Length: 274
Image (cartoon, rainbow, N blue to C red):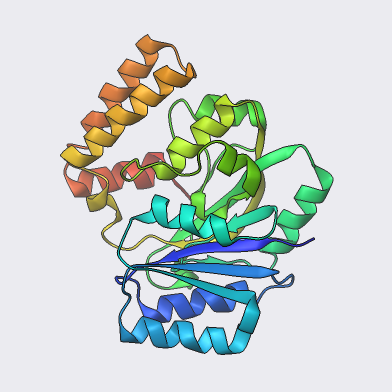
């Protein structure tokens, strides 16, 4: 089965992280992708450019590099990349994460076994700097009904693991501008449209979270995004307005907590050490 990998790269990425990412996609993978589409979201600097050029020389036509003249943000960059994906199935990946060796083989096998599924992902282990410290599991529900319920409260997919049918995503308008939550916004629209979704029970990716993750998930801008999420849920009729409003207040309160306390909540209640 042919499939595309879609990534977006911007200037703050570290070359060594991008190198590890590509190694996990290509050298270490039991089933290699047919096509890799890498969107350069604005100028990326000389070091990252050198890394990209080296992989272009190695992969030739397999790697398509789409250079955007300015930084558009993740959602818009991915929409541009989707235009260049020539296969029906598109697998997402972030440029600082590392796939398990059998990620693509497992996902292709799932597609062949469950042809009605339009969108699915998998479980991830989070790590800070060294992959040997990847002991924090970010679990998401596996079957369609559980995902639909979970989506009312939290994002039901690990974005960097998802695979989806390109045409279905484009038909729904692709990614829409929704600061910090472009993926959650899209998943809600997929579910509301009645498409079948799922998640693999397996860990298929190691996600680099970094020390600043919790700092980025707080503040007024995040609360504005929460309000936009609330409005979307009401528009799609995925949740009773009363419960949607209550959840908005609860989620917004968390965005005002100190970073250290927010980090403890994420690690102790929203993650599991394995």
